[in-house]
Image (cartoon, rainbow, N blue to C red; front, top):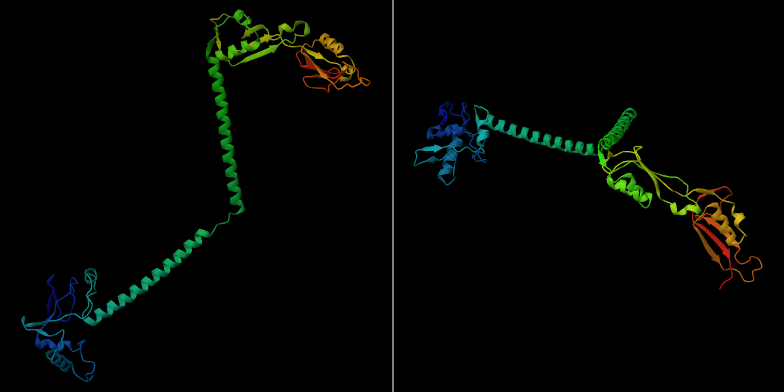
Length: 350
């Protein structure tokens, strides 16, 4: 029996590993037990196959005495021979998990079988990894095609999302307008000037600018259209100012920010004109009188020095009349009294 040094279990003499814990056993042999090694791996290959186990061991022993280092040579100092396992030593994990075997041949066969199995497993894993990489590469380049129903469903979702965003946007604008209207209707602003003082300002534009600077936002200007050539000095003067229909307010009065402010002022009247041919061919002084009588007061004269002998056109004869740059007007068309009227007439060069 061979006792395990780790767990103390008594194993059969032929065992190399402990059957209880798998610990590698140290097997010692005496000279009398040399017959156990009938199948010595160092046996001379030239020996006759008919030799018995004892004669093989004896031959090996004699070779050892002649200089051949047999693994079974007796240690003379210790008095016993130590058996050195010819198989490759396994690591601690493999030794622990080594199968319980009753002889060396089974252990060797099992190790060889496990090595073959591990090689097959490694080959299978490599093939599986290669196949996985191929599938992954293929999956990266493959683009699935959507069916018509899936495409329609996707388009419907996009349309609904756009509509939803549009509704939110318009709802935001709507509530923003309501909030602004509410805020300007609640906030009140002091006028700072009485209606009498504002009427003394130069023109309606100055009054309008004053109210804008004060913070009012609902200002309207209304021209009376009553200014012509005879009263052109009144052009732009303020006639009346009302704040929420109040035309006699004080400087200390306060009104809402969006209070309705209307500024009435003198503006140019609209005047009907004659056709262009009516003015052409007449003397320019005569045309000026006609336009003054009609009410126009912003008239300019322009000479055209194209006469040589004065046979076709006489000096001072009207070539054209334009109203605010328009030369192609018809009879009855209206222009404001302050329109820029340009009368072009023929003359001799200086």
